[in-house]
Length: 114
Length: 115
Image 1: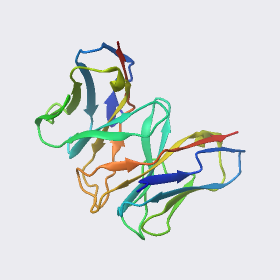
Image 2 (image 1 turned 90 degrees about the vertical axis):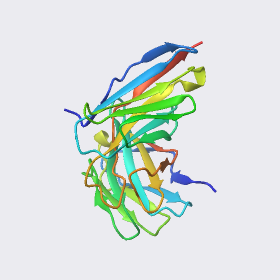
Image 3 (image 1 turned 180 degrees about the vertical axis):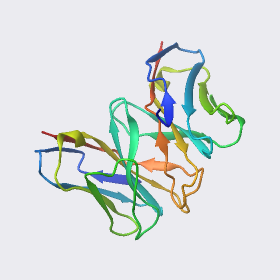
Image 4 (image 1 turned 60 degrees about the horizontal axis):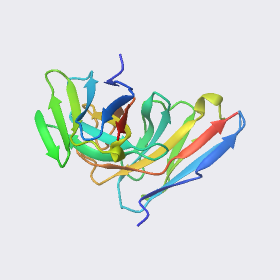
């Protein structure tokens, strides 16, 4: 079992709708959770991080964390064509001292249709 | 302020050749990382350096070596390239001190093909 799992997609969502991206992780002691966005041919860039159970909102983006279910999600409201990208879930496992040893999922490719 | 830079952008090697990928950051970050990205596999950590003078293995270190030349520079060396090392390589750095919510900043990547 992969440590961090995502549905690779592609996920197709109409413009203006809510896009929901999901991620599960295997290590119950994982500390922090990150969502990176990667446009085709480009490098990843951080959208949000979350480390407490519940929701965290930043503009059109909401990250949700449920540690009991080992589940983290990203919601994108009012989806725009510019949101079309691959979204990478990353998890910081326990015991990572002095460096941020992230474990990434395989990414979900999201397409927003005008 | 260039952020994280990587050279070269593209490289084609023959099996058995060696090469060094260069990475530099100008953000005064302590921690630096090397990842590879293969289709359908996400990013996998090869090596990292928590601070100047230290390096440690990540998830997939076999076939690679690294050098943390100074605080700014972190290089990745392939001693004897193999086709399985065909990939896109990303260097990243994070703010000091590396903590649980630090942002990793990525370079533009190096596309390596081994024939």
